[in-house]
Length: 473
Ligand code: SAH
Ligand code: SF4
Ligand code: F3S
Image 1 (cartoon, rainbow, N blue to C red):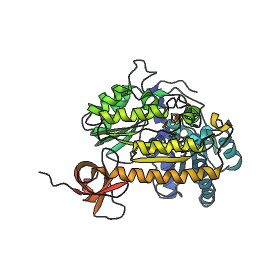
Image 2: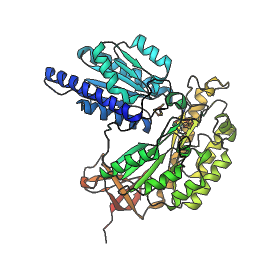
Image 3: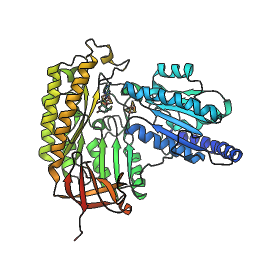
Image 4: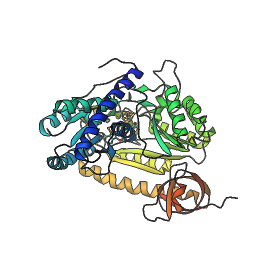
């Protein structure tokens, strides 16, 4: 791995971007049209954010983004958290092979979490020879350099780092929304929950320098961004390895001071170390949204122990109560895994009990997926598929009922909505979010997108509201 300081590395990459620009220019002159690119993103918000950075680099090279997988450069930013995320990529690749046969100048790239698995890369090198470049999660900033090597050599370029302690700042990035943006505050994960592959593919935990984070958010605010989503696998451990350690709550207080930023969200806090200091910030801050995504994974203390989560059912429920007591109106959402090895009917009922007690606004439910290399994959008593499916269906029902009742609670109130998109079904309407992340659809013009407006919540429809813009006094 090269050992360069941050600024030198981003300057070095700028040089490759310039070189690729000449190449892209030359190609598009020959073809008589601009070169197009398409990034297909799988997985979580980390990947979504990485894709914005990758697109930023491609646009600087002169590529024009298109929605079409027949683009001149197609890049798959992959996820491997569950097996089906992983399988989808092979399906897409089979399809791309045919497209590339028709357009031999096409370049195909693979990056993201799946590429950090040696067996995956071996399989692609053996069976998917038409892929042009492969890189991993630690060196996305090298995109231009890797592409340059590919166009100069005419053979597949594979550049994967096992881990890194490097954080490269100041590279271009292209935002998907003009008014909101994800902001990485840390990378990697040290928790090693026993089912999870993320620590193996994203490397060790490292926090970005608070000055760099603040500078980025100030710049976003100057560009019109009103909402930031702070991203990390466990934001509660933000700041630990820094020269001048800082807590996540302290970071939030700093971000709160930035003018122009109206809403601050974060993802994901681990229940094991959500501090009182953070609860105080949630209670006091006008900008930090009153929504906590608090993954429980299971309601059974016995399973939680096997998952290496470091909390019990009782501790989790007590935490929820403590937050509710200080932050009235707070919304909770969660992640749940069904069918972890050794999960009995009783364990499952404990999970159902948590769902009923907490009253989540919504739950992301997953069927346990065995990930090679994780401790859980080697555990005996894997739960049979039919048992898991049955539990999963039962859980979905409970979750649906619980969140439906819960979302009703604001009917009749007037609340601030950040308008995000035109409505999918009715062009006279727009769609936005409450601070607790629940969606609201209401009549209004597209000009409202990106602004925060008061809306009367007229009707609850299960997971969302139909509203009406409030008449300003
Ligand atoms: N860092 C976050 C989660 C990242 S992964 C946290 O700790 O909450 C997102 C979700 O995927 C996890 O919360 C978990 O519910 C789910 N997940 C992770 N590994 C899984 C596996 N092997 N099988 C099924 N779901 C899994
Ligand atoms: Fe995976 Fe656990 Fe880390 Fe979340 S905290 S990324 S679930 S190991
Ligand atoms: Fe998937 Fe990687 Fe995110 S495995 S869930 S894209 S960190």
